[in-house]
Image 1 (cartoon, rainbow, N blue to C red):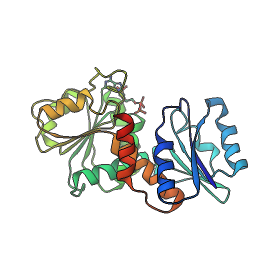
Image 2: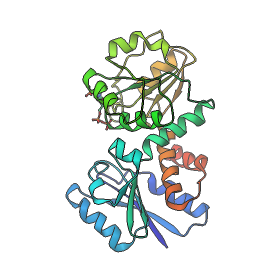
Image 3: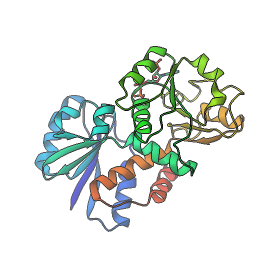
Image 4: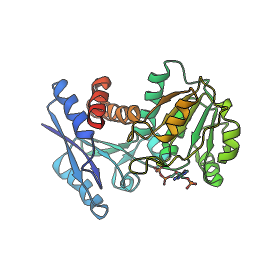
Length: 276
Ligand code: ATR
């Protein structure tokens, strides 16, 4: 029986065991997925434990996504550029790190849009770790018309400078971005402002200039509708919460581990039921 899991601190509220174990059962894969509560000073030992116990693969979550990197044998190119790993696969004793968070976001948006992403003019709000993963993944997909706006302009500038792929991105402060909001087809909120329990926080005010045809996405899924998304909905735009990103980062990890594609609709249903 193969063993998988997720390392984090805290970890007990993770929904990953629910979705992966259900997919293993459903697909007749002889495997189990567990929660591993790993404190920061135990991370290196935990990775040694993975080797000793021959654990087949694991997810990595807060606060370990960057710190785990030196303990692995190989890092995928995109994960290396992002500087964070959320998925590790054990290939005959070699631990290889991937990042499926950004690609998971891209896959979720593609399915939601149902149209090619290539010509969408995109605005990313925020310039932290989550923004970085999403930005680099979108650029890697060939979407080059992406601008970044952030409360601290300099952080948006630095993020663009650090992108390893060719882009035509510009950095803006919030006021400037709010003025230009009508230019964007896709707007992605990546900060943690508005996440439970701070549900009254709205990181960015959406002006009336927003196009009704725009897709406005927030990576937060708890609450399912943030104050930011409510604003966008009131202005007539289509909205998209963070459930898809969570579901597809898991689906992509599952594919890396098993080589087969799980039923993402089922995974989504489990998440929605748990949150509902
Ligand atoms: P994460 O890894 O979750 O993205 P992070 O790396 O700490 O978290 O990044 C935080 C991001 O959220 C930054 O873009 C931050 O803006 P600053 O660069 O100006 O600090 C943004 N952020 C956090 N709280 C915010 C708030 N209340 N309003 C607007 N932006 C906020």
